[in-house]
Image (cartoon, rainbow, N blue to C red; front, side, top):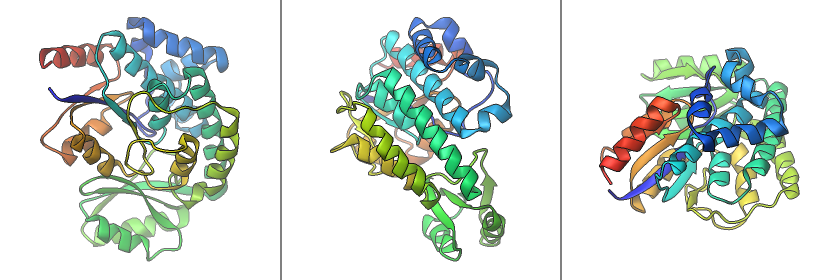
Length: 306
């Protein structure tokens, strides 16, 4: 086995009940949730029993995902699974930043609370949405975006999948053109057009709020959504720019593979990233850990191949 990479789930992967069995089975996971609960009362019940509608709100989604992502990673570390490098998808990058030692879990949670609130405000002001476009080359999707005043490429996920952000008045005509071009477009369960100019005000305000926090260099190589390269320079600038710029996920995974990663573990709700990684490269193995069952099976699989 080569190097093991942890990848932290992003917004859109949330579901009611997430994290509940992690809390029950792992002391390290419990510590993550309990510390967050002391900062924002009710976060555990929101994760464990919140409604889909509650969890769809960005100001709820982001702190909940942060907890579940970080709890899953902490449970793996508790079990002796090493992490040689890390990346997080959008919100997941903040959980990864904490796991890699650049910021304390408590301050990371406070940062996410601020980020989620700002992005929720920006979403409500902009009236924007996101859609995943499949079965078309990136260049074709980019050309279609250019035909509209406010449709932007936002997540370069894997070959044949590019997520766009757009104004609600334009997104459906855009998706009609996608279908006419032979592609498939699916609206995503998020509350706004993230990683696009719709988030410019949120990015500016978040950059200002980051001055309140001490953020150091990661002790584990951490790849940035904004550059698709390991963190280098001011982490605060990378975190702020990430909000209003595309997530370069395919490039990120390709660079991690080039640096020796051959085993990826998605930590957090769902297995979206696991699926994307499998489409990016057929030369790597991908697992996920989101609950007691998948945590146990992933630990066993990694140890068998060590």
